[in-house]
Image 1: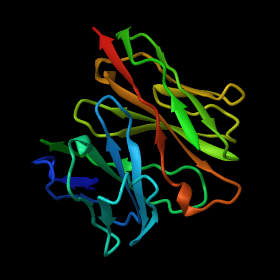
Image 2: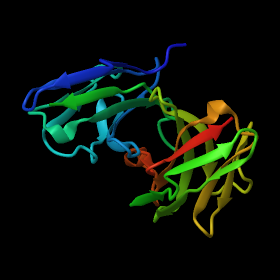
Image 3: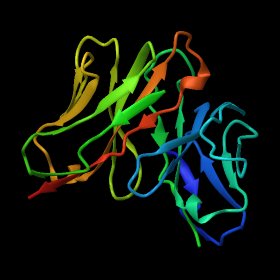
Length: 117
Length: 120
């Protein structure tokens, strides 16, 4: 079946502009995650959705970052007043395990490479 | 808080040899899970293997095995009979649970990764 998809694959914008990054999770997965991966680093957690609600947004760096998942499927990560330091690959993942157990395989999308000039 | 440390930024290994990628972790959680992911140049994170903190046996998945030493807080990945297609970045990650499981502990914490290059 189809995996996690993310659009666009690449986004180049100017400092101060607004951007939206989209994630389509695997069908039926209730959990959705956003991570940010800067050059030479491992992914860093941003936010986690369980259904439509953000269960954990402790990784969002500041109030310029916001994410939604209005129908419990597709999610959009929104970044206002972009800064050069926002340049990174933004990864989305989804999983079907919702609670209990530690095993929680997260299936990752190919990422969106954001470049802020 | 959780922390993953991968001290090998890069490794070169001859094809068909075995390789060990190091990972140490730190956590205050009562129980936790350890994961290894592979990230080829295409950028997608590929799940390789999982080890639970209360699992008595080391995890194995095909050519991948996890050398789990709980007392030393290490979870090294062993790849046997390496292949050219194994060349990629490898990330160790963990997820923990506190005294009470809750949705807030779903996130994965990753290390900085090891770039593995297999030499023909």
